[in-house]
Length: 165
Length: 352
Ligand SMILES: NC(=O)c1ccc[n+]([C@@H]2O[C@H](COP(=O)([O-])OP(=O)(O)OC[C@H]3O[C@@H](n4cnc5c(N)ncnc54)[C@H](OP(=O)(O)O)[C@@H]3O)[C@@H](O)[C@H]2O)c1
Image (cartoon, rainbow over all chains, first blue to last red; front, side, top):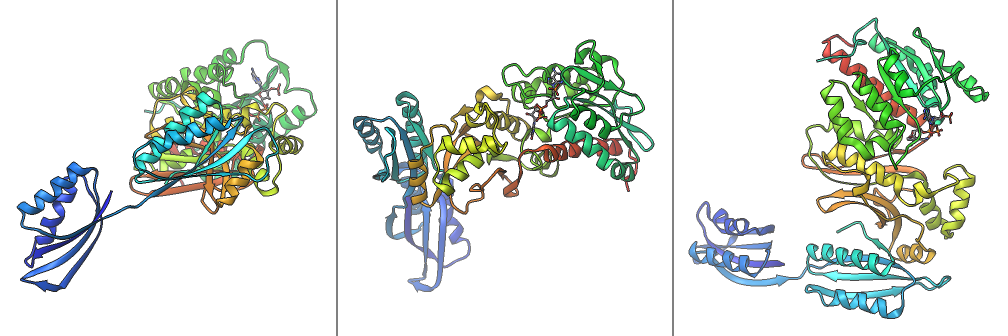
């Protein structure tokens, strides 16, 4: 998940590194840093950091490291970045089978939206649908990929995935 | 160590050419066309000292005339004499430097290519091949044998026709670690999928068209079920990513079941459907995928493309013609030149 924080650091050399270290030490990924030298309040400068963290545990670890290092967290907000995954499903699928597939995906954690689109022409007994899924992280896309691959083998439909996010 | 006797100026590079169909004849023509260039550059005479088809052969220690061989084969007379014993037995007795193995690909048991290649490697001869079967099924055995005997097994022509994929990766990109590859490795499927997308035609119709145009075989199984792509992907995974896999390890879905509706729905999302081979940490797979229009993999027609991701260079994409008489001969020539360069290096000889 992505997080955006406003930090207040002492305006002495080496403070920025001290503030960023806990993120990388806890497997976080720094996405952006905006360093604002002008905004000094009470001998402190303001830095805005955007980073991705693995889970709540690592996020907590980052926050406690900041506390120990005297880094003040002024504001924090979660940024939900979603990833789109697209699939085409073609086969002799009864409606109930399709519903089972979408329900399977819906029940996964981190799935934001699911959208099904049908083709206008239905020339064959075959049904073809486009499945658009929005998820919270990339790992989830792999999970849905695997789920659908397994389903395509057991339910005997053709699965066409995208080429990745 | 150099076990080959043909290194250095003034030496001949004597080829035994096994298989004299499309590719074999293309190689004979390329040898005729490029022998002066090779002589100027390396001081080596390129000679075909033996040639085989399924029943007949011709052998001449001083070198056969390549264009005469092609003319004779095309007149339906075979290459010369009827072969008295197996090609492998003859490969043990003949005097040659490099086996050029271009018999048909067999993905069931790799024969006759496997025995031919093995025999040559056992006799400490270098091998250049376009035959996918032996490499897609027995890569490690052949690779180990060639290393043990200090000779080379080169196979640029097995994947991507004229597109320099294997030598590019193994030579120029030697210092890179390739962590993933994605590509279109079968021109027939790509032609069919491009036509389906561009003209809105159904699979069966475009397949017939491809057969009439000579892009697809009468039995299209090998292409449209992804067998050819899977063989090539297995070869690349071994050769470029250092994996130890065979054709059977590739998860494979072909293009037969792709409907017009699927093509149309993909187009709505500004995507095209292509048969993509992919190797990454998650596995090795050939399957139809949706590719965004304008993406390097969204190529049309019979072209092949390979997209690699490496640790230093980042993304590299190679596109080119995937098959054909001249194109495949081009890849075989590049391997022969690779052997000549190695010889020049080993001898520390100077190359102009
Ligand atoms: N064509 C391409 O564009 C292309 C591209 C890349 C790789 N390749 C690969 O290159 C190889 C050759 O392809 P091709 O298109 O040239 O095939 P081809 O036209 O069918 O020619 C095969 C040749 O091998 C000969 N042969 C068959 N069995 C033999 C045996 N047991 N011993 C000796 N010779 C035998 C055939 O003899 P007869 O003439 O007597 O039938 C023929 O001359 C295949 O492995 C193919 O997958 C082809």
